[in-house]
Image (cartoon, rainbow, N blue to C red; front, side):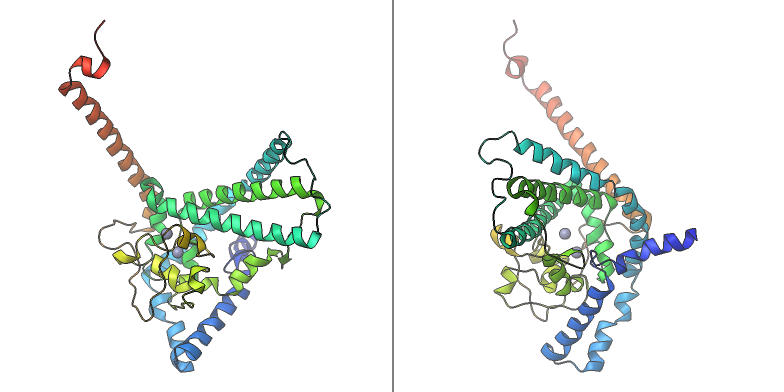
Length: 338
Ligand SMILES: [Zn+2]
Ligand SMILES: [Zn+2]
């Protein structure tokens, strides 16, 4: 009985519409891939089939690591579930803090049109979530200590929908905290201003906008099917091909397309790169970066990298102090002796 319960829990992401790898979204991504290859790329159905179910991708060394990490990280995620409490705590804190200001009073707009409020709340939740994902992702690339963790995701050399789970648990915690802060702020502000008319449009329990994002083939981002949108649309939504470029080793693709669903943030902050048709992409970290080689490495190496960065910084500071103490006279460093 125990084993069945554990197994059910490990597979629960496949039957949960809140999760990207829900079977419904996977099935639709598969249909989109077939339609793209046959109708746009003019492949025969047989070629499209062979291309989609490419054994070299699904059974590659990198993909097999992804599958193992999926199961190990599920166990870690059970430990992270108390983060939900953080979200409630943040929302409650902001809600009471809002009572201390005099510009807007509690429930001031509670007579607003309910349809408008629900639509605005659903949109705000989606935008706040996507915007904070963009910035956290950008910081994970820019700050060496965060990059040490994010490198695990970028060490994938082939991409399958399960690659989305190829992340270090520390990254999972950071994204969980980000979500708690973003959602906590939006929920408390809306409840303060609009009172109990606040609600969210959902389909199968999921924010309608998140539902459409997954229905539109979010699983194809981590896949070898390179679907690009029209140029104007790639300024608004990140296409699968754009996220694939984000995983490319090529210099011109470095630090581009950090966006999750929306490309607007990349466009606004100068990191947008449109997809390139028919371009072969090599995924991974390239030759200049040392990535994790084994499963144990995936969990341990980021901490080793971080300790190296810390030691290097301590040495730099010591060198600076040492140089200044040996090269500069006492007065130059501390002022005249009294
Ligand atoms: Zn990244
Ligand atoms: Zn990715």
